[in-house]
Image (cartoon, rainbow, N blue to C red; front, side, top):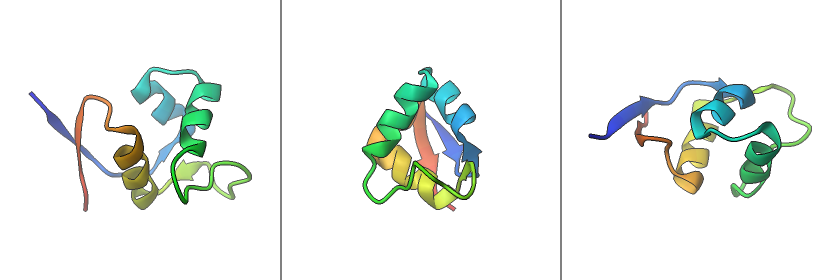
Length: 68
């Protein structure tokens, strides 16, 4: 059964936990997402719009996402 993930701001620590990978691996993956700023960010949180980009590129860990 697939569950929907609500798009809310998440930080790198939360994302790496969702995907079950280390921080360096998560950053490497995030750098491959088109138009996503990973390095030298002004904030540690990824916005819901950025999460949508991440999930579309990497897939959603465990299900689908629900866009607001």
